Image (cartoon, rainbow, N blue to C red; front, side, top):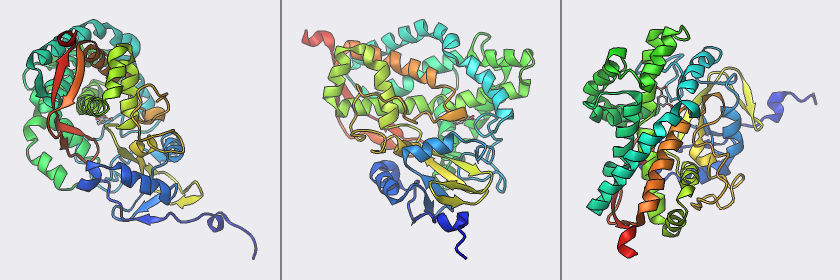
Length: 408
Ligand code: OVM
C-alpha cells in the first residue's frame, strides 16, 4: 500500500495555452518565455499537444540525449512517424545515430575551421567593399543592403552557386523554417509562391551546376571517395542552402538592431574591433535567429520529475534558455563583453550547428569591417520584422551611419 512507484512521485506538467507561432509572440517572445520558465521545468502546450522546455538546464539535457529525444521523427511539429513531411527529410538534421554520424562526419569536415580558413581573404575583401559601399550611401536599408547582401555574395560563392537565381535562396529558406512550425497560413502563403524557388534549389544542388572548387564540390568529392552516395551529396548541398542563408542574414540583422539600440555597446566594439567575434557570440545568445525546434521521445521518460510518454513532441526553446536567469546574470542585457559561451543559440550535442564556424567567420569579418570604418549607427525609422514560424529577423532596417573620417 505504501510502496512508491515512479508514477507516484512524478508530477504532471502544468498546462499552458502558449502559442509559439502567434504574431505577438513572434514579435517579442521574451516575456512569454519568462512566463513559461516560471511555470515549471516542463510545460504542456495544449494547442499543439507538445511539451515545452524553456530553462537552460532542461533544454541542454534534451539536446544532449538523442537516444531518448530523437530527430528522425522531424524537428518540427510534424511527426514523421504519423504525418507526411512536406519535403524529403534532411539526411543530417532529421536523422539519428548511427546513420547521422556518418553523414555528419563529412559535413563537419567540409565546414571545419581548417577547410573554411581558405575563405578568409575573399570574405575580408568582400566585407571591406560592402562597408565602403554603404558608407557612400550613408542612409540605407541594413537588412537588404548589408545583412542579406553579404551572405548572398560570400556564402553562395563559397558553396559554388551560379550568380543567376540567388533571389530564390531566402524565399526557399523561409519556407523550410516555416515548415518546422504548424502547417499554418504563414507556411501556405510562402509555399504558394515558391514552386520556382524549389525548382531552382533542386537544380543547383546537382554537381554540374556547381563550381569545381566550392563546398558543394567538396561534398561530391566525398561521394567519389565512397563516404556518401552522390544522391546524399546532393541532399547535403540542399542542407547548406536551407540552413546557411536565412540564418546568417537574420543573425546579422539581430546584430545591427542590438548595436543600434545599444550605442554604448557599439562604441565598445568600435574602439576594439577585435571584439567582433565576441559580439556575434553575444548576439546569438541574446537574440538568436533560431528560436526553437522539437525532438520526439523514443521511450517513456522523466524530465525534472515530469513523466512523458513515448512518441511525444518536445519543444526545446533555445532562445529562452539563452535568457534563463538560472544560467545568466542580467540575461536581458546585451553585453558583448560577457562570457556568452554556453549559450544554445547554435543548439548543442550531436546536432549542434554544423555551420557555426562559417557563421562566426562571416559575422566576425563583416562586423569587424563595420566597426573599423563606422563611427556610429542610428535607426532612422522603425525596423520591419520578418515573421517566420522558426527564425526571427527583419525584412527592413532603415539606418544612417557616420564614417570614421568625417569626425576626425
Ligand atoms: C537541412 C536543414 C534545414 C534547415 C535548418 C537546418 C538548422 C538544416 O536541410 O538539413 O539546420
